[in-house]
Length: 218
Image 1: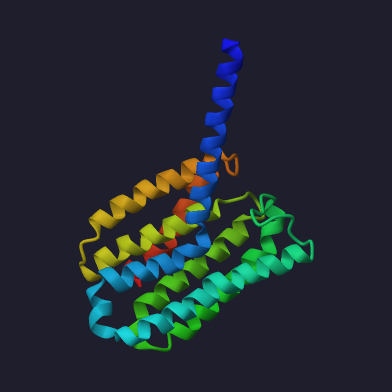
Image 2: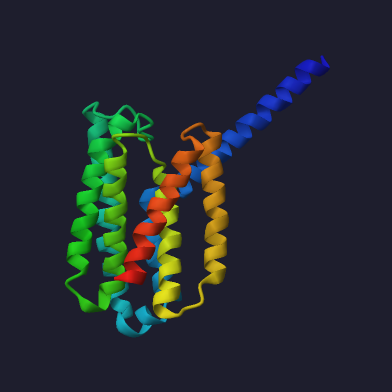
């Protein structure tokens, strides 16, 4: 009887942890990261406050949301309907090629639209960084699978760190919080068995460097 209770308790705790890991994976899905980065810029960036009228914020949110969230999501739904991907997790790296290619083109088109307006240069550079990260992932995907979740959170942290240097804004508190979240997201992906540790590290590195280098060195 004690062994049965212990087993039951273990299974219950395992299920709770697994559900928590899945919830974390959904909340911090990579498709949400561009919009979250944009929200941080609009709310914690004096450059945006002085150079971009508040009336345009909703329009910019709409543009970024359509090309980084809506189009990739709808394309995944269509690809699943066509049986080109087995599920939305796309655990098989071969299934990731077409969705990542579509997302890459969609991100680039978003950058193309935003870079026409000088006041949006920072936002357009962040979108270009996201495009580079997506295309780099697509290329490396031919060799091994990389964590898209970590690319997303790595890109968020790279953007914040880059803006800290570029604009001299103190984002240390945000960076610390984001690093803690990155640790939680990475641990969740490992716990779910979605990735090996090196895939987590590569994902974070690609996302971080793609954004940080563009903002600091270009």
